[in-house]
Amino acid sequence: MGFLEFKERLEAARWPLERVMLSELSALHTDEASLLAQEWAEWPHSRLRQLLKQLVQVSEKDGTLEFEVVFKFALRSTDGEARVLAVNGLRNSKDRTLISFMIEILLYDDHIPVREAAAEAMAYFCVMACDHRLHVHDEQRLRSALYSIAKSSTDPPNLKHLALEAVAVFEGP
Image (cartoon, rainbow, N blue to C red; front, side, top):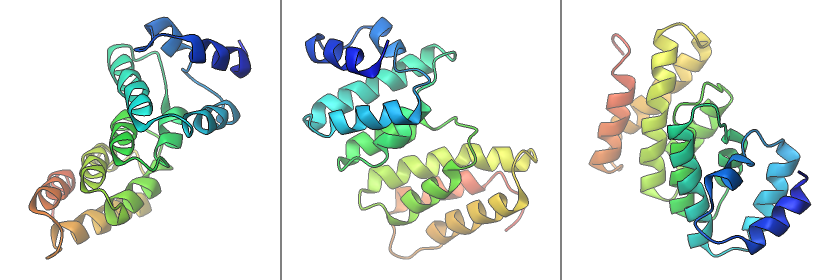
């Protein structure tokens, strides 16, 4: 089914969406996800949150469905709660290109819950680095970003705690 047909069905659908319809968003191509992101830019924030929450739940229940490209576009949302859901949807991703995004979010996002979600998501990449499934450079970038938060005198205690938890898998500083 093409995206335009899906868009028409989406406009007519009852919310929350049925699992069958959500599964059609699995493994979207980047251009299709871009069209979806343009569509949801017109939605109320609550509708985007509902979609992302459903996608997170479905992906946790069924590992064969993959919504990473949708979550990656949602990282750009102007809504902090939607960005938290997007980060949570990417929490178990093995895509090392996400490390740069997660570091940027951890260090600079203006919504503390988004930064906290990024710290939690980065814990998985730290485990991958300990298992030698990432480049040494990636490990160094992870350590540097997480330690900078842990040592910060201005960041909230919970964010610092999550950063310490994530980096704790490494032996020594």
